[in-house]
Image (cartoon, rainbow, N blue to C red; front, top):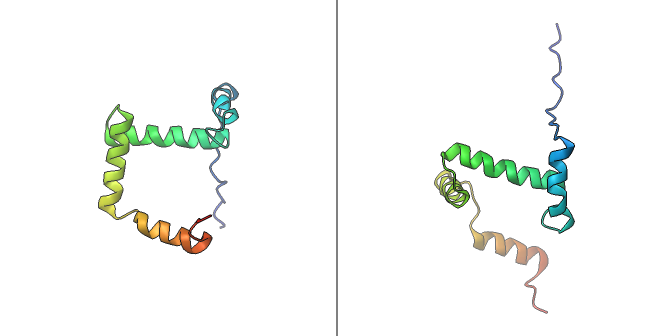
Amino acid sequence: MNKPVRPPDTFFIPPSLAARFQPLVDKGVFESVGEAIFVAASAFADRMEFGVTDDVEAIRLSIEAAIEEGDYLDAEVVFAELRQRYGDGGD
């Protein structure tokens, strides 16, 4: 018997919630409402994961956890790759 195929997860954002993010999109803070919601959900997830209510503390703990797990790229490596791809930017 064939196993049923599960459709991909989709999430509904009520129009009234999406409308609250639209001014930030209009100002250029975010490229889309979807990006704004992703950032907000990520911040909320960090708060929940680390059991804190302060955004700065949640960010600090998230960075600390990424470093401990080795889940990051060293800035010099990133900049070297960008220089190789786009040049040194000297005008």
